[in-house]
Image 1: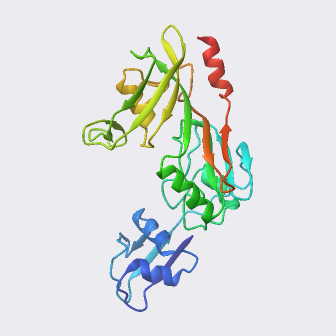
Image 2 (image 1 turned 30 degrees about the horizontal axis):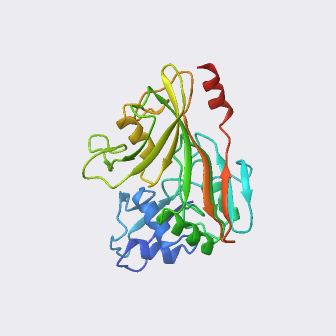
Image 3 (image 1 turned 90 degrees about the vertical axis):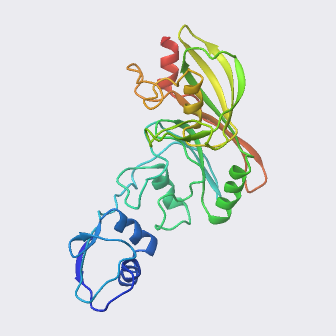
Length: 288
């Protein structure tokens, strides 16, 4: 969308004015575009709360929404309430802003949900990092979304991951209680710290290799980067982790896979969904 128009009557707020003038956009969408400087006033960056005067020139340059209708993802299970996907590594769970310039799990789910275009995360109730593959569940309607979100918030969902780490943990199995906080020196990362939020991870060894260990990880909380941070703290970073370890030239991804998800569906049926280890991870283990 590219549009330029002149304000006829003064307004107390830019976002309210545009939401009224452009009914195809919600006020929250307008605010996000203003934050990205896709909407300017008199050629300058603006704020949503900016007052407008008659004669002000508003310029809108919003990228056209990309068409992802031909894109697909592997579906593990689907009914009227939920869809369960085996997310490949490299795919985002959802975009980070109003304008979406790449295919995500959310965009794949969008046509199947009752959520409107005003959200960048339709149906999403939990997330996997871009580099992590495996099971992710999404809601297809509002009541199911609330049903699933409640289970995640009350920690009634059982999640199991498979991870290959560098080195060998001191104990073959343990439960880690290590609070996680944002790293002020690298704000895009996290670390174990006394001012952080409680985070709990159970792990057990599945197989030892010369320089690596295959672990089963069970997060009991859902902090951002939790498994990656906890493994780094043990001195055993996950293979291929560029944030908390180092790249692995033989593997162009993170060796972290959401193997299974146990949850109660709206039908009251307790169900476990499983995604086998991807071929590229199986091949890497075979070569060790």
